[in-house]
Image 1 (cartoon, rainbow, N blue to C red):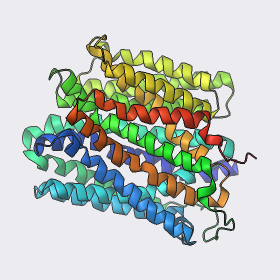
Image 2 (image 1 turned 90 degrees about the horizontal axis):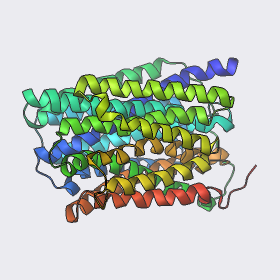
Image 3 (image 1 turned 180 degrees about the vertical axis):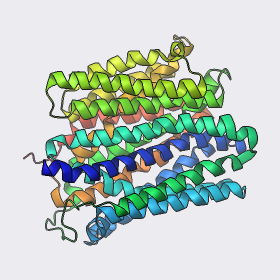
Length: 464
């Protein structure tokens, strides 16, 4: 009981953090079509938004990594709490600068610069928060806790496109011309991040590990093959997730030949991110130590409740009626089924979900035009099966690394670089061929994840 109460406040704090950066990150998917129109950009140029944002994760975590190599790891020196506070302050300042850039109607380059700074701030949060959640309790339920936190991250990414599309495309652009429509949303985000920094600062959080310890194990982290392969898995997973989200609005508006507006396409996008929320809630229960009967009941309740949240938000904001979205329920049932098949084994579930996503991508590309106009639900459903990939990859990759965990964490967060590299590549492929063919980029990523879930996670690993 004492352990549960001591971990409660840290889990609440981290859960709020996951929600906030999920909300902010998913707004990039709204910015891409917005900037594409405002500055008359190509698919490749518009996807540079993600390059500027996610390259910051690589730069920031690379600095963390080298500091940890010389026993000056910021997490050990500063502690988890202060590291999180610094990340929030940097992110809040970046949002204020973004709002200022909108107010002054500055060039596309200035917006990219502020997005880079925002990514630096979120790097502090990622490097500290993920291992922090993993060690707040039993090792066996680390994936469950991380899935729970990631579920709230996905709640943020779900509400981001729905609310962002509504306010930016539906309201602000009707009253404010050009990029100045972005001023108020990012001003509000900056204020919220500042308030959250104050909340963390005034919260009593006990550090789960003694700060200032030097690493006793001198083994090079590069000798852990399963960690290196897991880092590559993070690269491909994040790249695939971001590529699909970044190009979904363009896919819907182009493939459906202008039958759907940017605002409506943004609302459909929330089902992609909402699927991740549903899947992560289910994953948190599936990988927990609850009895099988309770697991099934909890998973059903969470699935239905999460769907209703997504549905009513989009119904009231964008008039997406049930007859327009009921297809999603079919994929929810399949998601539930494959969770049952995967059981409580993170590596097995990862491989199964990566295989399902590979199939969904092929069907969603609809190469022979054999499906009706609703075939885009194959792509939207990928979010359901993306759900557990980050947490499962992360926990598999850092398993048994002990005091090297912060160093490994910075390496894994570094590989969020995939979100910077793969979306522009997909945009380039869309420019030279078409938007459908461009989805070959995430397909390659999921094929690699099948390999890691089947074999890569155990190569050169010593099991305890």
